[in-house]
Length: 212
Image (cartoon, rainbow, N blue to C red; front, side):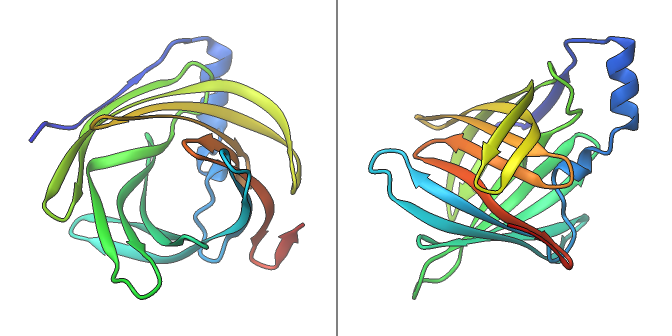
């Protein structure tokens, strides 16, 4: 099995950026408080069909020395539970649990945990990651490169947001995927464009606050 590796390569070491990074609460760009909810308008790029995707932070999980929060995503295709880890290097996915109507849940494990949001969220930050994806008895190698591109003002059904934009280039076996994702402080993921789908924030809710 190939050993996983995770490298952060700082591109800019300006004093102002370093000071901003030290003060910024990066976790606010990916809220993991229990009960935080998002609804996304999801568009299939090829046929332009649309459907709602509902996402919620649920309960804590613990497996050996690893622990974090479970984020559950539901739409017409089925249910996916993401077992998330939060570290000083970013937010990582430890494993996925996928299920459809009338079918048992199937686990997909990443070794090591794969990044989904990389820190520090300063333009120029780059990540290179290599590891394995395991489904049942099948191991598939993954190579992942990510970069924080910069700040972007975007408009989605939920409104206008000042976002940090990230780009990911991922190779899973013979499959290659390019993804762009936009995150806003205190909100989380606002937009995603990758693979077959575009996902745009329609509403979000934290505790008793609701944004439509």
